[in-house]
Amino acid sequence: MGVRARRYCAAGIALLLATTVVSPPAEAQRRYGGGEQDPQPQKATLAIVGGMLIDGHEGRPVPHSLILIDGSRIVAVGTRDTLKVPPGTRVLDASGMTVMPGLIDVHVHMDTLGHTDYQHWHQTYRSRLQEIYDVASRQLLTYGVTTAVDLGGYTPEIQNFKKRIAAGQVVAPRLKFAMGFISNYADSFIPTWHRGYQTVNVHTVDDARAAALKWIEAGADVLKAYDGLTGDQVTVIAEEARKKGLWVTGHVSNPENAIARVQAGQDAIEHTGGLSYGSTVPPELIRVLLQRRTIIVPTMLISTVQLDAVDWPEFWTDNQRATSTTPPDIWADIRASLEHPERVLTNLGGFVRRDSVERSRAIFKQLREAGIPMLIGTDSSTPLNLKTDAVWREMEQFVLNGVPPMEVIGLATRRNAEYIKMGPDLGTVTRGKFADIIIVDGNPLANIRDLRNVVAVVKDGKIYREPTVSPTATSNAATVAKNPR
Ligand SMILES: [Zn+2]
Image (cartoon, rainbow, N blue to C red; front, side):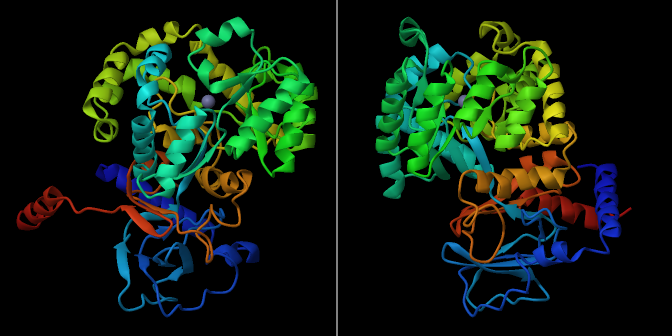
């Protein structure tokens, strides 16, 4: 970061503090994670000390924070003035950096890594899914996503993967799974669809109920109502989901289908494409969405990453976050597919069109103005949508479309946790919750892209990544000290 950028950040913080000197009581209560100051624990296993804390409640940040963790849970949140680090506690120094809850991505696919040819990918890697899941897990966790929802996959392999996680054989974020899709396509399409082997394709209400029960039986946390389903079919899927406390999300084909599905009990809609015939969501659909408090996961980044790749292909082909976390042979294959990102725009049967960015922005604006809740999900890894970069890119899209950074952070943490029914345990840095915390080198309130710079990741109180002091930085500092001017 250049000197000018640093000054800009400093000015941003000063302005923020100046405008929040008089804090309303509710906001003050949130400062230390829920009202009174947390009592001093006698014992802790981990302390995160000195960073500016953005705790997920969207109140003002806490300078010089101190977070104490014992085992998997947060036991106290305060500042260097209100808490002490108990003797023998391991310390992570977050001074000068930002501390915040681990990010939650409510729409990922663990079986893809950004390769631009889906057919080739699924044919080649179906037999290597465990390895792909491991890579996806490492990428999510290393870059700050401590919880993710996998929307559709191959059940036997996911069950095997869950066993490996439970046995401690894999380093993975906290994951929730749809286990497979429920679709209503022409049967002849299924063998040609790259994910045909992951779906139960239904045509009747009875089929739809049987499909829902199949995925619930297999261990689903959420049901994915995919393309083609009617309102009646979604009604029985939602009925079965409710009985087990699950939620239902999925696609919609067009505004009429959206109204039918929402009224049938679909809790959330992935992507904005089916909400309108042009760039305007019909008022009747807006009314139903508001009435049912339906969640929209707009996945704004999908089109923009593909367009950005045309302008800056090296960001993808030479992406150090991706190369350092992917086995060389798999990366070579993905990289080759990235060589001509402009082809992706036409290769995917209209999957992305240049005008779709403008269209999704217009829809986003309309939904936001109407007060429809929208959350952070990335659909990583659609083509070029690398897991190492997806979540900050989607958060950036929200900021670019007018949502304040503090609110966007609240969406990717607290609000996403509530949506996936984990609000009491996740989503804020609060005493009693799981210790899922990241440290970011930078200030995402001043520049949301600073979320690229995740330097430490703690999940369940365990450190998965920690800050390193670069020898180069030290020698530079020494050089500057010796040659002051
Ligand atoms: Zn998806």
